[in-house]
Length: 343
Image (cartoon, rainbow, N blue to C red; front, side, top):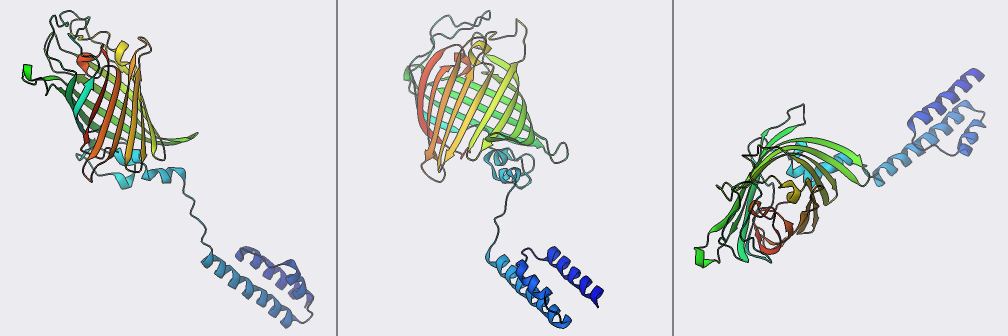
């Protein structure tokens, strides 16, 4: 009978190790081992098994372990993920209009310096006489993007078309019949790639590669335009996001270049910081020229007014609030409303 007893003990112990998440104290097993009678000894082991199963079941029901989410999975609820449709649950298909840059109207925009007259070092691009201007005007911006191709490579890679239009309207200048002083048109083609790379303090969510054309659609001497290719890196941490965008201007011929020195004022790239706190949205845009040592800063604040509108405050300081003013430095402040919850 001794071999049978030995193997039966071994079997019960191994079964316990494989199936019980919590083992009984060693003294309980020793108590059973000291029992001479086979039937009573097995009954002792059975009793320990029953007690452990009861404890394990009650523990599992009463103590639910928290679910540990992978950082990438948690980021699927991110703002960048939603706005750029980076994740499966945010994809809406092609040719649906989505927010791109802020959409707003600022009925009151006041500047400390008007550009009279605007000029450019390109031949025949300098206005020779003062033109209509005003220290207070209306500024508004329209912007959208739409997806034209998704999942280009497997479940990643998206091609977007984006368009932004910004206008400066001299509404309060009645002497010149309230003309539009400047309107800038900026179409873009953007290839977006989901990255989801963990970095210290941030998650690198996406990489955008873009081609942008911007012009004011005017004839000489007020014509201004330029073309750029850029790479934009989108990083995120909670309600804070960073969009880092270096660019390279595409060269133009001497005869067709409206503004050969534009990068000395509008810079070699920009950094956009966005932060959301409750219903308030804050953003800061900065750009800088390594070759010219010039740049600009723009601060925006959106705050709740109603379910449809947000109050909107914008402060700009530096060069290039519009293309016609690319080489003119000014500080302006505007107050109005935003029509879309642009974040």
